[in-house]
Image 1 (cartoon, chains in turn green, yellow):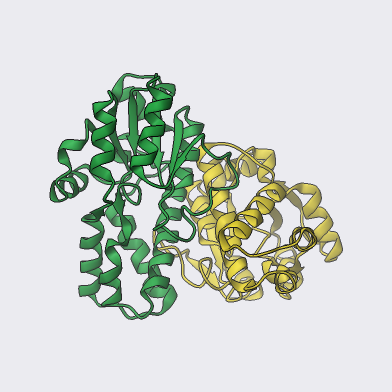
Image 2 (cartoon, rainbow over the protein chains, first blue to last red):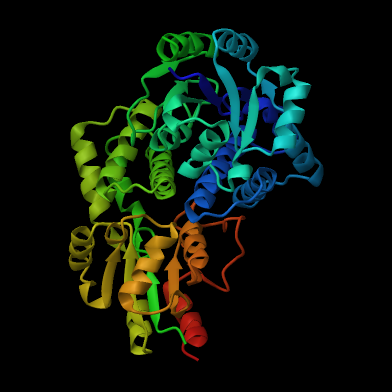
Length: 231
Length: 231
């Protein structure tokens, strides 16, 4: 029995591509810019996790943006940067989120947000998407003082919820997050968001085994979680 | 006074692009493949560093190769894979390596290899490049049980050499390595290899301050190190 299911938020329940139209209005090659920005942000999370420091996510987002401007030699006005950072705070949810989370909770599972984001930012994004009633708790890496995939980021959540890590399921679109979760003792489930092309989700990271539970939509994945965790 | 100078090897003293002709013979878009391969390898190093596990570098190289084949849907024969992994063991040194390291040692500095590679692989590569006499010691992340940028990877080296981290200089082409070094108490120097375009070196990572010492060739950087560390 696993009655707690933790969800990654950015890219898993909310669509990172919400920022693309803003980039399209302000940089030469928005796809290239976005791709490099995601690489950099994900690498910055891993570096800070490895060296044991913590920097707030909005700061990392901005630093990654600044890197791309320099590296690509692209002109991006302060206006575009401000709009981009604003858009990255208020992503659009994927369509399967509400039905998926509601089904899971009705079956008897607690739904937790376990995110790299700041709590106020997450709550504001949930409110704007009218999904604030979908979560039993919102736990951030800032509270743990370290980013995923460091084990402490997951163990902190388990401790706060008063359960063993093995009683928790982690759902993410990013393999590196699931590798960290499995390493900390949680059970991983991979939500394969085809929309997140590139490094992130089409191919599972080859340094770990494929999770037992995999699906291409949350509604499909939730049925597998219920069948496995609540039986 | 800093009389110990540690060098990153792959990409800093030896040219990663040695593998490009092999890729050109075996995959559709060799530049794209190489770029993704480098990013994946660097990310795998950071992930294992963050979760505290260790996997030998040749295995990570192969796993990153496998990822690229799947992700890019490119056909790569077993032959090409074998040739690629062989080529990644025996990179060509940059032209400025011998004069740079010799100058440094004549000035009174010990030259240390501090590498993610396996010791036997490094020694074989140094021998093939006729550079085996250039190093006072070869220290690997495997001995420390953790990859850079984790602090233990650097502190292990300082301990083995019997010096304080502050007595060590770290030279690398990759900002993430220098961020880790600085975090562990070493003094960073950035060798800006213009050949390593893309994610790695043209632009310094925006989550850290630019190192005090920066140059575009080893010969130039070595003069700055001597002027700063031995004065």
